[in-house]
Length: 120
View (cartoon, helix red, strand yellow):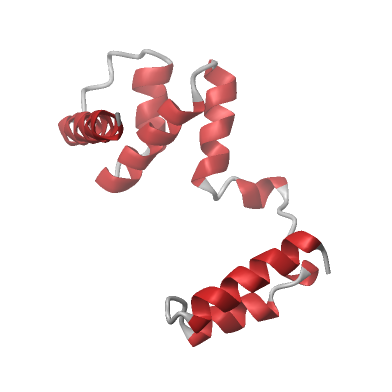
């Protein structure tokens, strides 16, 4: 067992003993080992938003965080990611603005701004 694994398990034990971690979660930590890791195929990876965000960031040479934020808004508003890609990454303004998406995006930006102001 590696030192990192020992450290993680020790932390889990401490959280469990302090009543912060449930018995169920603690048991899952104890069951986790190298056999728990699954290497995803390229097809499986496409189901994960973080992967698609990286693909779009690389393809359109945009900051990953901006793409991730936009994909979060798509998820929150039920907007298909293709809307964001076509209208904002490809710049196709013939696609009508989705007002729900735009308002949610602005709200997320305002929340992020507020967090950055508070942390200063």
